[in-house]
Image (cartoon, rainbow, N blue to C red; front, side):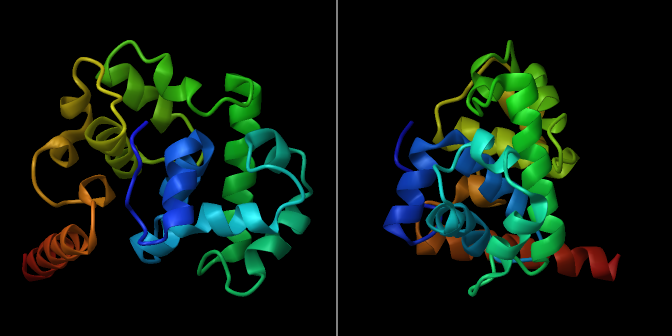
Length: 189
């Protein structure tokens, strides 16, 4: 997988590039906080763990212990309790269905629809988050089964719509502008 540049933090970006579970966690955390803070979260969590950042490590933890690690300053999310539970559920699901191998979610996909179905079946991944994850995998990680752009919907198109289009500070600013314009249009409608 190519080296991602999503956060402005070299260590966090390296982890996201090398660890499929970290990438899924970043996407899971990406709600109601800034994109770069969400994707730095896995690196910060890895520093707070007694073991490696792997689904089996998280799945084997007590949820209250994981929640405390989410609450340590700086907190990993605006809602550390609920997000710790979601991360725990995701880890358990990956252990049960994919033998703890997060990359098996996308490596085994037959086509874009199957990829979206697999991601959408993960705890905490609704339709929009699924489409963005498909776009991120396709645009930046080389995961391009037939039909991936269609499965990603508008996020699979060229432009600056989501974290899938972030490569540097300039593209991050363009994604923010697009999101603000979209919110303004929705408000006026």
